[in-house]
Length: 119
Image (cartoon, rainbow, N blue to C red; front, side, top):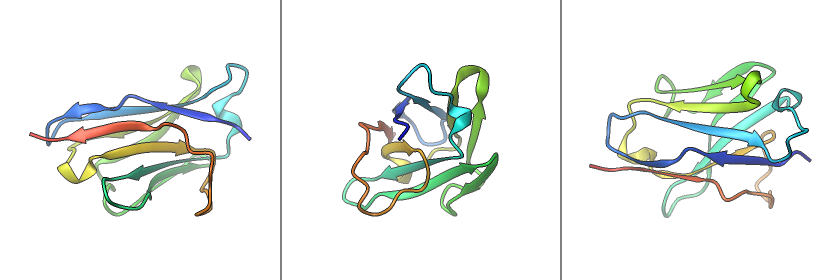
């Protein structure tokens, strides 16, 4: 199974923007070969939640981020991005990307990338 690595997190203030990256861990793997890429997040004290998916080129978003987040793929960069605009304090979480929507007992989570939105 393809292993994906996340990056791009950081500390921002409410209303700011941030772009997260998700790329294959192996240089020979093309992100375009992954039919569905999913972004999840786990906020402090909460369960992990699905944020956005890009499936066969079609994006889908959870209601909490729709209109603020954009998921897209740049083949030249071999990366799927999550562009996050108008960030809110409730977006604070560790963000993970996975090759597909994963089952509840999924064990292959990466380190993720931490996003902190705070004034």
